[in-house]
Image 1: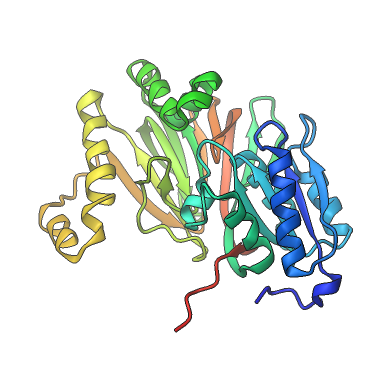
Image 2 (image 1 turned 180 degrees about the vertical axis):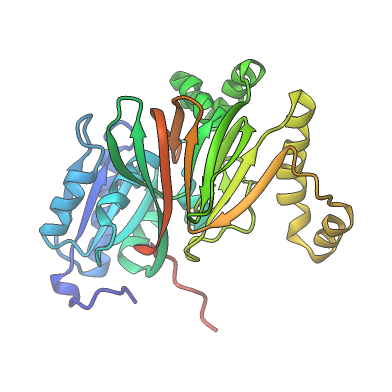
Length: 333
């Protein structure tokens, strides 16, 4: 049953939607039908704007007493709504309408059925998950906090996002990132970064990119960090430093073949154990509750697929179980 203690007659949802991403007429029809079936009150509706990605209107919805907030849009809209719902008792329901739909993929939520996604807001159960929190010092010296649900990155991944063509994303979806990678990777050069895990002394290394994950599934169902969990209070970190095209191909094999296929079975996991080596030249993985990053010069930074410009330093930490998400009820025993 929904976690809220309110009676059904006094419950109502709020929808925060990106008008560029959603078909509003279909969304309204689906929400209205689900609302009537659940015998909830009239739903509140809020559109995102260029000035408000969703944080302000979500806080308004919470103040107005919404029992759940439905984020309808891409990963940026979901991230903005989650930021405003952090440490509240109001749940987040996701209607994925973007390119990556990263949180929905990692939670195994419906991706292509609007009615199924909407129904979870009214009939799903609540699950507490972690939020990543990034304290960012920009190139200009300003310091701000931002949350992320799936992954943050400094380096090539952020460059690829900046180079991704918007028109191509509309045509081919996440494959547009592959196009950006083909154009960016040959020109990218390793850079030096200092990092401190859980407050330990700084270490220094040359990298192409560093990824800090709250969960590990990427577009295309690629498992970058298969051990990452959404509710363990731990960040899983991948320091990528391949050399040349061969190094990137080795990483691709690891992510697509080992993580994506072999780990699904005990036989496959045995093969990994028999063939793996301690070679960390191409990819070093770390785990911890927090990490501080200081690149040699301001570098590109991204959160959940949104570019955030150049940063001088970033302090990232896991806020354990700070967000409630509406998910399908487990099957009856």
